[in-house]
Image (cartoon, rainbow, N blue to C red; front, side, top):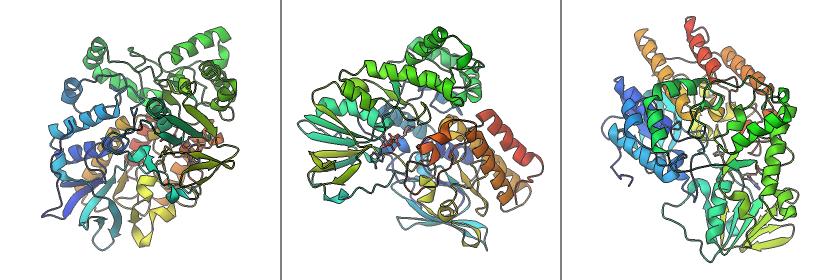
Length: 547
Ligand code: NA7
């Protein structure tokens, strides 16, 4: 059971060295690490407990789609050795148990105020301090502010006509109730077939009397191949954890565990330089091992359309094989974007669900949702009557957690406005010009969405701690990147993305899932090794990239 320990309300002191927003992986490690270094630290989180995105995403079937043994903290040998995962891909409840264990072990909750949304963060020029206000009426001051607000934390705002008119029950996968929802005997509708929809739909179909799935873009989804953890393999990884973590840091997407095997080396071969038979063998292996191994089976699958298409073709055929009705198969098979340019989904029985008599697939691509009505959803003049409607419509990814706070830096500069025209402006995804002593973890234009968020968070938080320590030693009060350094970083991110196929697709990687959001790559795609090097270089020459 997740403990319900009292959280640390802001009593007494309202002045801190560091305020941390968010109590997911990044926020918890930040709290632990800064506190260990003697800083006074205060955390806030909108959720009622630790867990970040896993606190909120409690929908049926929610589980991580990275190997549990990699999607975990590496900062503590004890945690690595003492904690044992029960499944290859941890379910949301197991992830919450892990958070609870870590929070208890290091007594982290005492410095976090839960159920509290940070509403504004304003730089006080005269005092060189941030003033942080919350929706619970707290005002605190901090020398430094760390936004560990998560990359997929801010649900996308929707603008369907008549949304409030629906008389049935409404749910959002990203804000799921804490008590189980029983859909037995109900007509249920779900909008969205990204990772969340793909995970939830098979479970919903088993319960509902009828499930209607409203799909705009079909997803490329590969079998999750989840299963109970093999204790011998878990022991093997534990005995070599340091080495595994070192390898993860070198690997594309930060993963080296493939289906009960620790793999080494990066691909150096083009998909186009091997025979079709060899390629198919490799793709069969990837299909049977999941963990997104397709991303790193050949060196050019994300950069060369023809190479990419060899996987696309293979996966489309596999999808078609699973679906009985050819017309339904047509609609469920992606056709108009390169595979992996939207994040691959991991599925368990998703496609087969559409062979059930109680499931209807409604394509809303050509004929978008006209309105949400009091009784259901209207598409192409036809009303689909529903008792419950679920939104699995995604997130204002990478930037939403930051721009939903009123952040005002020097001379009244506002982050929300500053990023509204050409996309996020950061240096290394870590800081922004005009916002001194404000740090982002797993932020926009960092490698996070295409790397391993937990490993990146640990790296970035150590980097931030070094900067704060440096300032103290140099008796300086503030640090911020120059506009020129920011410009250079943004052009580097664009160049790295332009070498890939990602910019060709409308995805949350490109900010293209949110109407009105500037189209810009939201992740650095140059690799973690290069990123680490650039982070060191930025400060090596006497902080030349900083004002
Ligand atoms: P995603 O992957 O952004 O999926 C959202 C889904 O909702 C996707 O199928 C969208 O279709 C659909 N959507 C969004 N807005 C609409 C409207 N207006 N009409 C119809 N359909 C709509 O979010 P998830 O929560 O599933 O997954 C997010 C990440 O979490 C995932 O990538 C993993 O990293 C974990 P679209 O594709 O935009 O046509």
